[in-house]
Length: 323
Ligand SMILES: Nc1nc2c(ncn2[C@@H]2O[C@H](COP(=O)(O)OP(=O)(O)OP(=O)(O)O)[C@@H](O)[C@H]2O)c(=O)[nH]1
Ligand SMILES: [Mg+2]
Ligand SMILES: [Zn+2]
Image: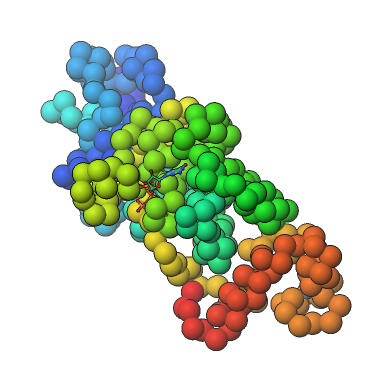
């Protein structure tokens, strides 16, 4: 009879890994109530209910993954089963939506691309590269301008005018103003989001406000007389309004990881498609009658976006940067 019963499995998400162990959060917080003797082997059920796991559940991959050279990653959706010694093993790893190397995390839904409104002013070419990289990896970008308290010149409105018509959500916030977080937390509720952007824009400060984590920030490092913060292991941090957050160390330059051709570049500028250039093979640089260039002239497409497009196009053409 028990042979016909299915193996006891819990769906969970890996949130961190330490010293060869993984730690996973069950997707259903009430998972224990679904563990019944009708479905599973009674002996196993008794063992689990008498000794329920601590959350997050400490687990190891089943040997089969080592043989297949598959390594579980932070963000993986997995199935967990009890082993005979009261521990838990990863028995399935679901297909990944995407996977990143730096930070080493998978199944990211949203990239919160962070730039400070001032100190330092945003590098729009880097911002556009991050937007392309996110789209290439099937991550939905959200542009987040930080340090709004320092913006006395209407910079936020200026940048919104550039990026909103491009079709990207634009949020402005200040870590110093409590009421400035809901727009972002509502967007990431129930999702996995990482924060990316240059050093010093306030990513860790923001994470500390919208999650239960306490990340090192520039302010703290200064107080403690440390240099720059060192990011420890990657970890999914529970957002205060649901969902998961990943802090990443800042960077000042970026090479797009996937190979894209100059001709494909325009595909990653959503507002260009909207202009409906009637020439199928137009690269929108110097072709007469190009609708994209007309839209730039009339202000429908922001000049800043078009300028970054031209710069990246030339870089791709000259292969100075290998994408
Ligand atoms: N005025 C102002 N300062 C802020 C705000 N958010 C962060 N800061 C300051 O900006 C500095 C850098 O903040 P961090 O959170 O460490 O920046 P980060 O993006 O995590 O930097 P890296 O970890 O190096 O990539 C700190 O001194 C913060 O106090 C803000 O909304 N307004
Ligand atoms: Mg930081
Ligand atoms: Zn064109």
